[in-house]
Length: 249
Ligand code: PEP
Image (cartoon, rainbow, N blue to C red):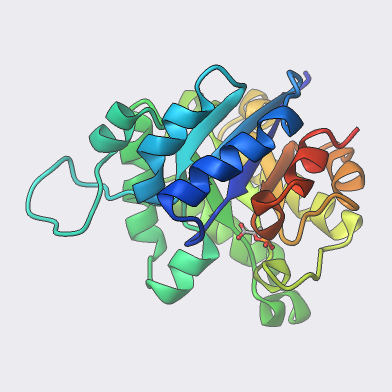
């Protein structure tokens, strides 16, 4: 079975709405690749202008976060209905920055994953180990725990349509990429874990990205691995290099 690659930019807390529109225009001629799903995950305030700006292109828009409640007195939060109405298709859930700085735990992330799926949006569920965990040899144990906890109550059919991003924390924004072997080993481990929880068909279908200092120079080798179905890209998604990553072949 061949899974379509998905390459998503995570813009983080960068780009004002007008800067965001300018970046979309600059990238437009560079990110045209029908063999790849291309997504810009942008700050909430940029969603509406970016959705407008990508119209007529191959790019879909994602959010960087969401709240799990339907609506109501949750000052400052954004619901799945709001994202959907604005034209969003994907939502990043459980990025390590949210787990670390905003203390989002697996119980909360599980609620978010379920709400996003229920709304008809696609979660990009992030997981990944710290350097200390890697050095003590518990990488796969930790990631299996994250995946199992975050997917409680999610069905096989729902998992088939979602995206999982393996992002070793020590490789995010550090310029330190995991080696191709390390990235493939963990992405395969995640797929094996999905096969154990669900079945082989679900594991074959789910798309697993690598993220962590992906750039124009390393994308081709990473994305050629059998269990790496594309990338979640931070820093390099804010420049013309993103076009080279999308056209990595
Ligand atoms: C990220 O934050 O998801 C990420 C992978 O960042 P970078 O590519 O900058 O390491």
